[in-house]
Image (cartoon, rainbow, N blue to C red):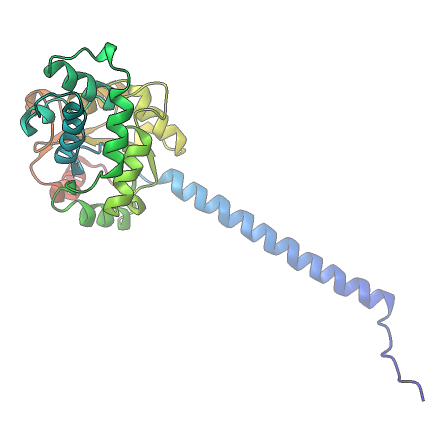
Length: 265
């Protein structure tokens, strides 16, 4: 005896089931699109804190010195001191290497191999001696919990900056990084920080710059951003002359300073 086959659903019921499934799928897709739009709006609305890297978040001078001196050693030149290197930091790797060569009696224009060699040596061991300043990871995490967005605008080359952040475990604390070669300009040109803000869908009216030196100050002022400076960094001029809204001795004091200035998330 042949096995009985289940009766097919009437066409009207089959069409009804398909219609309900289609409606549910359409509603689910609509909810997903709305959720994405909400997330994007929330991301754009958060107050954005734009940080410098070297001299503000991290003390990188010892590893920069090690790489510079390795390049000089290959050229039979004496090592530079940490104090010398600190005054050369802030304008990007090409300027650092050129200043080191000039200080050692060499002509940077006659040695195009020096910069790529420096970057090779530096990125291979970029966090052996580099450390975040006290309170930096904890304070950044606190600020993000309070609703701030955080990003980095540094004259350090993009790949080197990402290498350092990954090596120190700081990368997850930032929404974006704009190294000195990400855009056509870099600090003190305001286009560097404004380009980063635009890339994040932000608004310069809801952003502030936190740095340590004259390039940070010049970029912030030209971009119309409030400026907070750290005294402990690599400034080559007196920080009190740079027109900061707040000067801090400790990174951990930043949340209270932002509250005082009304720069709230």
